Image (cartoon, rainbow, N blue to C red; front, side, top):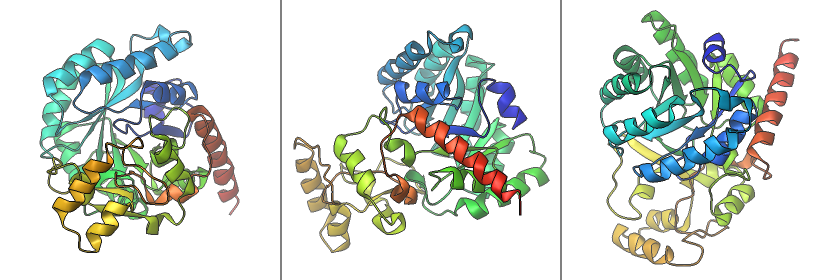
Length: 346
């Protein structure tokens, strides 16, 4: 906890972070999370023009606050390392100096070391956080890249992650023990995957996490960059373990899958997936999907009748209303503290 507090002096504990969901977590969302004494992260793809646009929005939102006094921009930025040019990403890091640079989805685990070296050269005061999903990968990243923190993504998480994985209930404590045994106790751990409220945060902290990253919960925020039908689909969802599924199909809907080997994604069980499971061929699934993208709703529909992927974790059934990102952070933090106080009585 103290390591986070030193690097992010404005935060209130427990540390709550929004996931850097590419195309969804923009500058307004990130700034709202930071202003609520959490850490906001801006997601990115390979379009650094759009990344700059969202970072500018975050900077503008923080300009009239105490955060503006720092040379560092008090939000983080996430890079999909398999997709993004290292040189172009470092230009963004040098220009904006985000307080955290988040790395995910390297083609090879060893690639994180090159990225970490470049980040330290571009922004020496910035912190490096890497998202991963196994004990073995965490140990390799710790040894080679020496990040300041690792986000351990459990199998319940929405969006992209390891095809083979474990829930945070085993992943976090086993990784924590392994890192300590290997002499990497200084690396802080964050947990993600299925966490939607104070109960989930309290559990993650009890497992050994020093902070928590939430993605699906922020899909139901006013600042999320999501299609209205996506948000409506999230709000109507129940029984998240049944209504979502992991599959590489979702990355094949537009065409060839560009994600590195070993990754898949969790989405709502949309019509495309159901038809594929029933035996409709991939080429036909892609044709129907790409035709649906031309519609006004861009392939999204409620009732699981859409053809475009709606990335969401198994906690989706706990997203029951739309609030501002700031309200989400504050309410979850207060709920966490109550749950931990109650647990301490046992």
